[in-house]
Length: 170
Image (cartoon, rainbow, N blue to C red; front, side, top):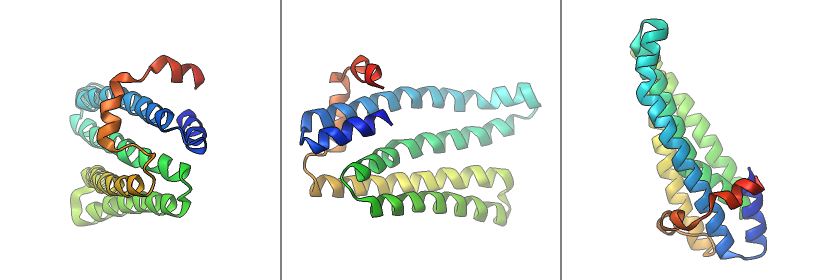
């Protein structure tokens, strides 16, 4: 949420450097939290086995955690940028696609007999599709608004951005 404020101010003042810094900070934090979430997803079957005597529950939980990680990468970044550049209609449509696709796929998977595994798998497949759509939208935003960095440029900038500077603000 703090990045949205920083990004909005940087966009309003046409400050390309600050836009790159804010998005690189968000990318760096997202990578750190994603790594922690992946470790949680990998350990979920063992935790579920210990708590419930059923490691399958952990597999399902792991799928949902991984779907959440995927959903918070390109999708979240694209939603923030859409908001900042004033493409609210596109932002709303992407949000609708995300919820509709993941929920529908989960329901379809259950109806075809995959049970709880189908719910987890539906969320994962939906998150992958929405992530892919988000990358395409980001590329279109980049073309329409050259002040927005490319995904590749953003990833190159991650090592140069200070975490302390933005953590202090947020």
